[in-house]
Image (cartoon, rainbow, N blue to C red; front, side, top):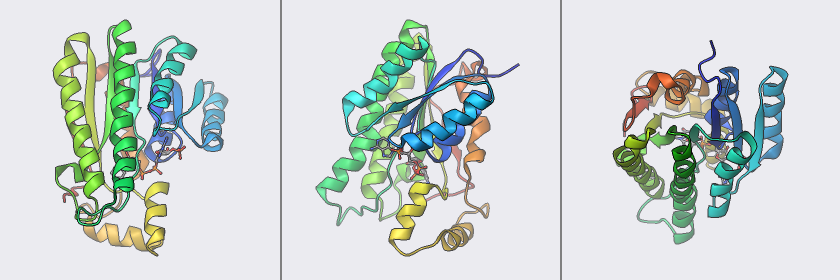
Length: 254
Ligand SMILES: NC(=O)c1ccc[n+]([C@@H]2O[C@H](COP(=O)([O-])OP(=O)(O)OC[C@H]3O[C@@H](n4cnc5c(N)ncnc54)[C@H](OP(=O)(O)O)[C@@H]3O)[C@@H](O)[C@H]2O)c1
């Protein structure tokens, strides 16, 4: 029995990292998957893989700086598959931005992509989930939400705002069976993270070695570390679970 049979799940940032791995895993468990993002080539590769295994998936070009695109991700999911049961809000950016040097453009960009976009994706998802009697939203968290490192002020605040959004949805929409949980990632060598570190001259090997010394459990996390928990959060097995903060971070704390 597939655990997500009959579900329709949209993923913001389904083109990369945990979002990409989740798209394949959700489809393997029987869900129809909608991949949001801008990179249609990467999305098509994933869709091809899913279809080869007999699954079904769709790409919706989504520029999260544009609120109408945020709503479009959800609306096209419903238009194509008739409903939305799950939203995995993965997309985000992680710029270096210390409080004593962060400029307004960097602040606006990180808040718009990480927080404002999530707010309006959730708004549209709630409007649609309400029509089918419920749904599950997973917001992607970071340990930076609890203060964070000095060089990530704007990023940390965007992830703190998401934590509040999760609590807000959990507090106010449980009576409609609309659930929301906050999945806190640790430290992963994703494309975004590798691109950021390479700007500062650090190779993947150097990053992995430095991070392994810093993370109490001794290694960086990988997308597969999140798959079982994501399937659980999207499935009916977790239907009484909302308002939870799950830390899968190898013991990392800032
Ligand atoms: N890597 C880590 O160590 C770490 C730790 C804690 C939390 N996180 C969280 O994990 C998430 C991914 O971050 P990451 O740096 O690791 O990146 P990543 O895996 O490379 O993925 C970034 C995703 O965000 C999408 N995205 C970025 N800007 C977008 C925009 N303007 N419009 C639409 N989609 C956009 C990208 O899609 P396209 O390229 O297709 O546009 C891509 O799918 C973020 O929420 C981040 O806060 C990461």
